[in-house]
Amino acid sequence: MTTSTTQQSARAFLAGLRKEISNHAGVGHSVLGRMATDARTREHFKILSGQHYPLVANFTGYMELLLLRAPNSEAKCWLAKVLVDEYGERSEGQDHATIYRTFMAAAGHNPGDEERVPLHPEVVHFIREHQRICTEEPFLVGLGAVGPGHEWSIPTMFEHVITGLRRAGFADREIEYWTCHMDQDQDHGAWLEEALAGYCDTPESQEQVRRGALLSLDARERFWWGVADKINSSMTKNLIPGFVTATASAERDQPTYEQLKQQLKVTISLGGRG
Image 1 (tube, rainbow, N blue to C red):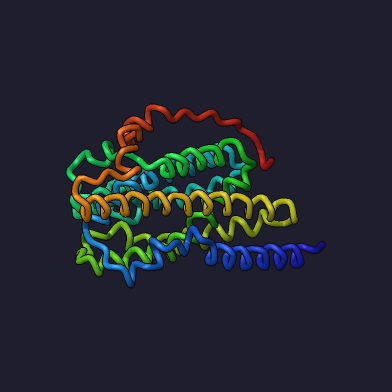
Image 2 (tube, one colour):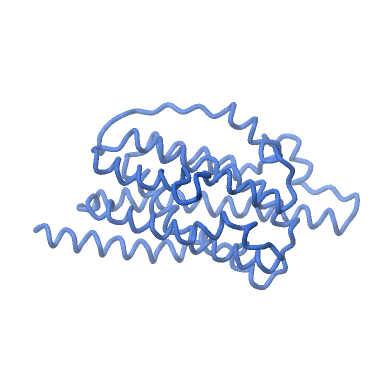
């Protein structure tokens, strides 16, 4: 197969993968799709933000783990380019977790709450699954997870969230975390597509990238169900005073982010493309 034919095959695969991702339930979950029709309050977004914060705080960690396993300097450069943005290059030096805490405050959290919110089991699963993918799966599976699985899906998901945030009365300055990702992640997705085009040169490599993207999106779908569970439990308690839902009673056994960080241990095997 010629270089030109290989590139055409890689680009065709990536175009198909983008379409598959856009149709995945993790990207079009009902929590997101109904932002334009179901009235959401600041209290709902307070719940969402408490569950979502650990995902925000851990994203750079996944990429750093993957960076250590990158097979060559070119792959490292692509990952590092995205990481520089995540560290705050285009956000006036503020990393994305810091910007997110501004949104949490607007939603009603006090400083430090992000460490103390009981986390739904699907939030914990999301973090553990991505750490596993980036340390135990082949490098291209990890690249599929943090590249297509994240950077290609986030603009669509966040567009839905922004619709709900504005309907709930949040000001632009309060939702900067969400709006800045609309531009930055479009760029990140394009950068990583260029990197992937050089790696997706065989059916085997293409399948690894696709596997990583779908593993990430499957975990994302489960995460959104966890958020829905938390919101619905809160709504039920407000409607029926004194009623204890299964989710509410289980919260005493759910770890906070502070506790989860103490439990997370990562072992990484350094290697090549494998």
